[in-house]
Length: 310
Picture 1 (spheres, rainbow, N blue to C red):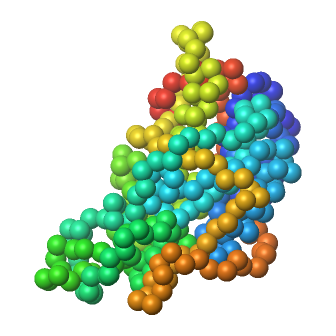
Picture 2 (picture 1 turned 60 degrees about the horizontal axis):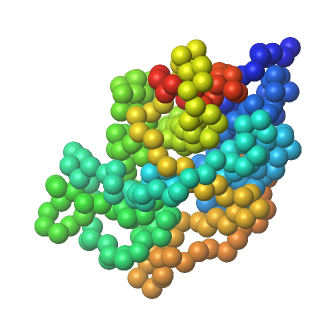
């Protein structure tokens, strides 16, 4: 049975397998935006590029225009990358925008986190840290990106409770995890009550809500977003996190060059990249799959950003 034989826009988030099952049931693939989940905990960082290429091939075969977006280009501080697909009735080229402010783990850490943590010496400074996770003696440096592949990794960071010029190494706290993954602060109580985030992060495979809202904002600005035609009759209820981030320039699938985290040692250049890994088969994840349908295509530019839940 076909879904919604009316002009709507479908926003789908889930695995490639879920997308391929759902697309034949939609009224129009051309009116679809797809966001594919990535099972980071099952993927070695050096092979992420191959998985993303496979996902982009899946999107192309489904009739969608693929693009890859990095969380770090949306005010984020993780190394997560996700494949998106856009229907031909939405855009022929994926949305793009200028780069935004670069953030690192240290911008999300709380130096007053209460607990007793092992101490260590302050790490040597890096004048121009690379935009990827940086490891030192098995711990993440706070001036690199957070590892989406190992969210429980300990971080070398400052602490007001450390003696003298000592630093500590500790995992990110629950509140820090929520901010690193762009969860709105208003959701904290509900998420903490439903999940034990020290063991399981339910949203770790999905693209950041900031990426989704940035894509919608870019489309709103390019598809009749500057017109007032029938504005009073075209208000559509939607949900968006508090702050918008700038959309990055999308990476073509064929030009992906993704590197693993940097292992930082006294004798190693922190910007060094690893060799390209062998081809791999895309794992299929069926967690947290969801689909929402709203918006007439001609009304996308008249979307009112009120209460849209992504």
